[in-house]
Image (cartoon, rainbow, N blue to C red; front, side, top):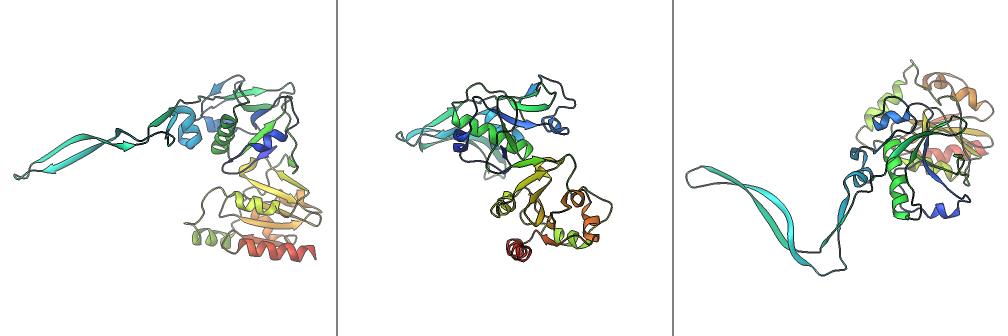
Length: 297
């Protein structure tokens, strides 16, 4: 099972997994461990991810607090503010004042201090796995999955043999990078990027989820991992899609999609095989639906 989105709000899907034990993590295909500040793979090495990755990593390292709205408000300390003023003679005075007011009591939650561990299986495959013993704590499991999403952009659920847990949508890996960077430059694409530079930067699971609704037979990801391009395989065609804004959707024939997906974007656009290029802009969804109707007729 592969989770590729910004965050999850529920882990009810874990209840449907038919496995005695699960592991949360990712399989290492390149040097993903470098995102944890580790230069070389060392089996058994464990580390807490930086709190700078996001709110879940920060809570893991620093803990957090929240207002207990089930209790009565109490007069308590809120914050400390710095102040400054000028007296009649024009001299500046500065200081600090504690602020108190009636508010709900705060509940302090200790950091979870979950570490990510570098490990191998019996087949010498490399993984980054969450070091967790209590799998009954659903709140903690959700936090851990979201930590992996913050650090790596995706998360994988494995069974006791460190094989991917199967879900309804079969996601496979291919041993090449889909649409690798090339030396040719698509000028129009660059202009589109500049035009939309201020909009929707970063990871967008919306496009991935939209293509899922068209019921692909398989989804492939390449050596670029789940932050690179995906290949959505349908009966007559293949859609090459990136979850990052500023790229584009490339529709190609399914018959030779493997060879075409190994091309750079420039080479693919120069070829006679591309069916359609759909830019990531405000018309993307409409353009995608129109193309889907056209290729299915």
